[in-house]
Image 1: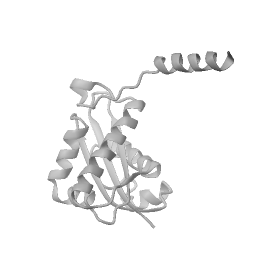
Image 2: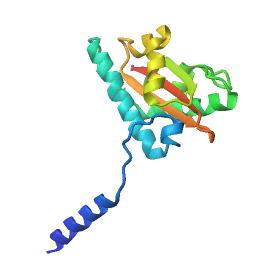
Image 3: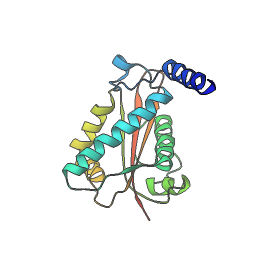
Image 4: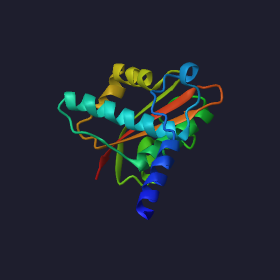
Length: 166
């Protein structure tokens, strides 16, 4: 009887948990990015990148919490600098930030953007840019991190870190 009660309680609790897995379509459509949405955006981003890499006969990437942390920190930093570029306010490089984040490898590419647009639009911009797409399709890449920092007005600072394990 206790196990039936336990199962019913778990089912009720599971039904109460709301998970927003909707695609983020930009501030005007989707509003602010919550912490839960960040998780789903990262997973969708990884799935999309891996699909594109598989189409090009490249290995799949793994999501790295270390690269996510590095990318999130840099996204916040470039917001404060008010420019989307690859150097930190301390003039750190992506490679140096990867070491600080304790990524057990090295960052071999970083893509940045500032936009009010959604997750797929920023990826399309990176794919249409020669250097950014070379990062995404680097045959040595093994790991991916995605940083997202949103201003109060809705503008998002995106950072994509591509790494290789040592």
